[in-house]
Image 1 (tube, rainbow over the protein chains, first blue to last red):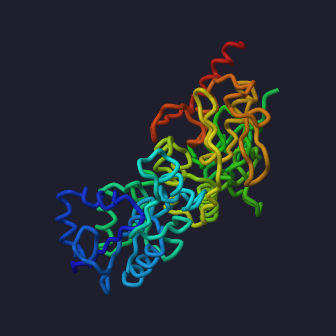
Image 2 (cartoon, chains in turn brown, blue; image 1 turned 90 degrees about the vertical axis):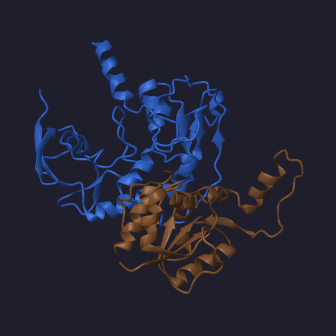
Length: 177
Length: 238
């Protein structure tokens, strides 16, 4: 079996989906036998590589930076997988979609009792009005819903992909799982 | 005079039922599963959600199984590529219509909309979310109405009118603007007709109606209570 080049990306999410990947515990060794981790918040690499076979993307698209990173990942990857409800539906980041980003920031940082009420602005990407799922921007090859999808589900999907099949539903997961 | 018994074919299976029975009822009696959402055993049938649509030979239209009476010689298909496509689209449209965010919903894991998504293989929503700004009515002492999760199945309206006899719930507006309202649109807690029985909460398929004080994912509904209740009532009447 040839090693596949695996990248993971963390957009507007809580990192729970990456934690789920780590939750495969000792089976990470099996994954390491199938995949070469070429880019991920879990490994030390600053730039998206020229070519990846599979990219797992966690999180909703919430800023121009997210859009750019997503498009770059799509451009350089053979298979793009939306991992978790944020990437698949928008989920928690999309809670703001009913009111917009400015109103959400006001509610969270100014309207609540706080010691030093202020909206954080330094070194943070400006939020878009809406947090949206990946497929609103790029073609997605596989959707893995769940909040987060279980380690077992990710393992099944990654094992299937390594064997050359794109696992379709039913993966044993659901929205909110 | 006894009711005539009709025979028909459902998914290639020869079945029979009483003339007054619907395709859904006969199918269920024969262990043929048709997806439903607004339909609930013990309540009148409405045909609102359109998930139970079936194909009937000789008719180009689709027919809602829950309100279509059987006919002699009818040939029904409850599964087809076309039906699957429509049912999937219905579930996706329901998800996109309001703010269904399963991960933070009280009914997570005990929700019929969620179950339907799994059953029909809905793993993402093709349509853009409308993300409407909708109210949450927590004015009642024990219960909450969250319009964000409502799919307008009208089970609450029906159970309140038909079983409890209070008719607290109704629907205002039409189409996509429809909203469940108590009395003549008063906060639930101020309703003069609500008896606080909680039947609406138990029959609600999603997290739109729930009991206060239960955290995310811990709302368990007791939906099968209706047939039990009605059987007991029937016994009392005898």
